[in-house]
Amino acid sequence: MGMKKNCDPKKITVQLRRIEGQVRAVERMYNEKRDIEEIVRVVKAARSSLDSVTKLLVDDKVSGCYDGKKVVKKQELSQLIKVLFDIT
Image (cartoon, rainbow, N blue to C red):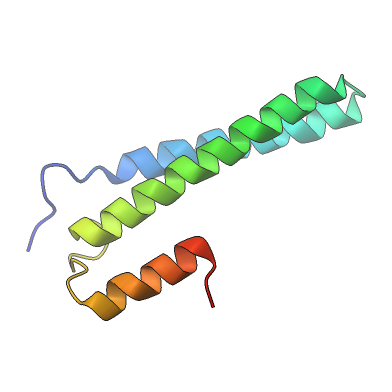
């Protein structure tokens, strides 16, 4: 089973590199004693980027892009939801 046309693993890699850059920027800004509000804005942007990559990862798993196996069992979907929402 090949990857579907809507599968684009590069999206996740690009997003992860963006997050890496944002985290480095926070460290640099902090070390330079930049305005805290400015640093917090970058932290919030990084958090938003993490949410975006989480969505991409879940979409890839559900659609079968990640490992070629779609989530089809209720138990698999329930486990993914538990992890996503930190439910025990």
